[in-house]
Image (cartoon, rainbow, N blue to C red; front, side):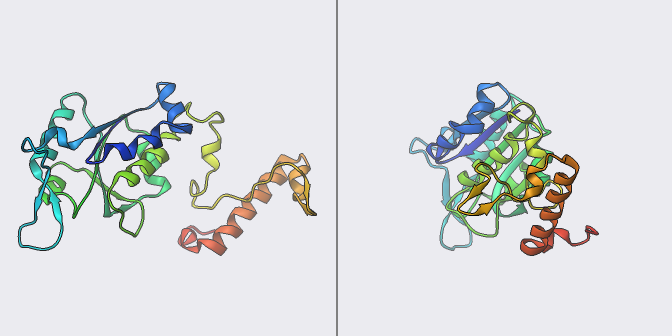
Length: 228
């Protein structure tokens, strides 16, 4: 998979992709992430990529011309399956969206900043708008890092145990069950006997019951209409 990211703050995106699973994915050649400084396509020698908004109001707006030039130039190198704008008013990211995007080949992400991007870019170039939650960040860079991570870890061969992602929270609209490791007894707090039984059927039944109970307690909204 190839992901291009347009941003006015490229340094913010260095660390998330240089460590852990995202680094492993790139080292294996399973994922390529390229971060592009939008000022490369600035409208003048001063690096301008934003301007005052028409109609007045506080805050600057990212201009059409730099974004359009960047998108069109990058699109000459590859055809994008989705051009994604990270914005608070986009569709809220969930596991289903990450699953779908992990099946794509080429993605372009636009990190919003200031008061956002000119609406004409959203209308004529953007194919998908995503929010990582009902709150506002200083820019779309952290949201882009979250999105890339949620997609990249799903690519075949990225995780050492490829079945691991299948049992993550939200994959089946249930939260993940409790997990335990050594020692069996820590300060008198013991691992449930069923996990030590070696009976895989009973273990899976227990995990499903725990997932269901935890979801009912913490995120009952996930069960609405599911019949569970």
